[in-house]
Length: 416
Ligand SMILES: Cc1ncc(COP(=O)(O)O)c(CNc2co[nH]c2=O)c1O
Image (cartoon, rainbow, N blue to C red; front, side, top):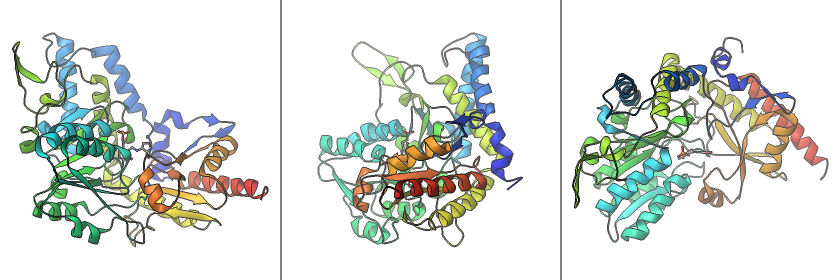
């Protein structure tokens, strides 16, 4: 519709103004990575053209400016998720590294034989494999929570699983495959009652809606810049300061020390303790520009618009003959489902669908297991297609996707 958020913002994204295979690009794979507005691209260029320098130790003007901008980016992240302090924000390479950081520091220091880590079957591999490695190292045990009939986290099973041996619950805020949202505040309350900590995988929520880590009560929370209009190569770990300053370092090197002797070293406080070596300076500053861009639009506005896109996508995709969508339908207010649909079409492999949509319609969606193989097995499938929209998409683009899908089905059905 004219004047929609998608119509008003898509001109900010140069990459969207192109044709692929002779068709105007319709990019519907933002759950994998989002596109970048000119404001972020200009910020990166300006950094490298005007004040690129190493941070924290240089005395000269360029280093001072680079340091100020780098630390300002950290403050922007802290404010964006309502963290109590920017000292609670650690820059990593991505959410995967953020989760690994917790596993290799807090995990190794606090977990032992028989301690339990509770996950769900729907977690991303980044929130399963680090815990498998940790369990092998410590003797801890992984417990997996299943799904309800409408393919959301089974909270009854979670309640039954939590016990005095539970030391960590690590789960998604929004699923990258089911699109459902976990009741994180309730999960935190129940986990804390048995003395467990909670890590929230917020990769698919922070880019799409207001997230308040203090309201959620999360002990740790991870997200990635590249999913929220920012550069790749930079992610965040939020942690409660009492936990962070009690954790051993993750990587050793410059920056993360207080003093170095030949036989030992003393360490800096968080966040420096966990940021060894030269950080991704330009990327962090670009991430800050992405947060400014999103904040100028407003996360409430972005979420409200995506709720509409989600309902339109789900309701119209579910009408296509032979389509099975995974995860729950949009709730009564629509806000319980992200603007993504993982689906299959009876008799057509997901990869054939996505290839045909790309080649014959210029529509970019994903196919495969979306790094949720255990979830796919749990659903009895080995692959799915996934269309995911962001605020720069429009209803017209969803219509192009749906028309392309119907054409694709017609094409492949002609062989049956
Ligand atoms: C829920 C969730 N957790 C963790 C990650 C890992 O983030 P990274 O460290 O920045 O890669 C992703 C990325 N999800 C996807 C990446 O590509 N397709 C996806 O669905 C995700 O969706």
